[in-house]
Image (spheres, rainbow, N blue to C red):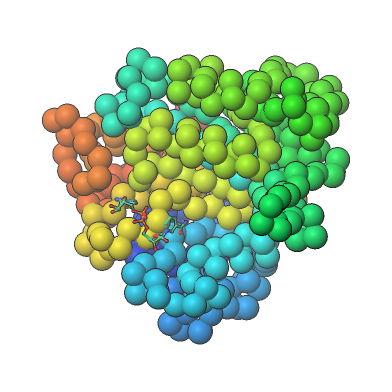
Length: 368
Ligand code: NAD
């Protein structure tokens, strides 16, 4: 399959972790006989330096023409004092808007070797493997300016959705559940909010199209509690923008490792922006010690959600797990009796595993 990928390394460790993800994607491309082509563009602080804006038109055009976009991170102290329209994060918000990314996907998986890094008991977090599907361009954060008001005595924010907007995100969540364990938890506040009652009705309508998916409705307060008491009970969670913002940050601390968290934001055409949850880590930039696993796992999400390459995505995820199981880790992670390695070393280990595992898969397939 031919796919064109735009790389937006951005600032700080962004360039290092994007190089790692590119190495891994090239290995997958070669092993599975795909043809991945890459094009690199500026965003964030480096774009301010080069083009006088954090989001050049050339970057927007290239992203719109790509099959998927992989982003590193933006920002750093060098650009902290700039006026707000030149701040690196404006580039990030701008590209999300330009691509009309309505769904944000945040998987959270507990890796056995890293359970000790969680602030929760190992017995609670062990086995957690969930995906939060958050509506990203509607809801409480996007009421039109005329619907927002504050006169010093009273204030109004608006939570509004059209049926189409809810159908779109709920459908994406059902599709995601079919690719996983087939269980969907729709999180709302239907005992109070009209928007949540409507949301529930739409989930009920949609479930008839996905009979293989089991569905459960949960109030957001109960979901917040269950995420830290029994995270293993979740497979896919779908929810409104603000609930999703809060729950995805809550869930992200389950694993206790910022360098391990990938994310995806997807539009109607299936084109996605894939990026690690962490920032540009200026304190370690250029030292060759950044953890590239969140970005490599974001590349796996890209293969699964934009290219429907589930075997390839799975292979990357298995390789990451194997490297950790073998005790290899970057400086930000601790593994008892493990071996600390740099960005390039851990990437090379994953690339080698992809080559050998893929060979094993093709040999096995010969006998099927
Ligand atoms: P950060 O995520 O960059 O770093 C927080 C801490 O985690 C640092 O000690 C850093 O060294 C460490 N860390 C983060 N990612 C790591 C990795 N992959 N490997 C090893 N260690 C890692 O957050 P911050 O320090 O608050 O922000 C730094 C800059 O990044 C700021 O300019 C901020 O605005 C920006 N930022 C960008 C994004 C993004 O591009 N999506 C997200 C968050 C922060």
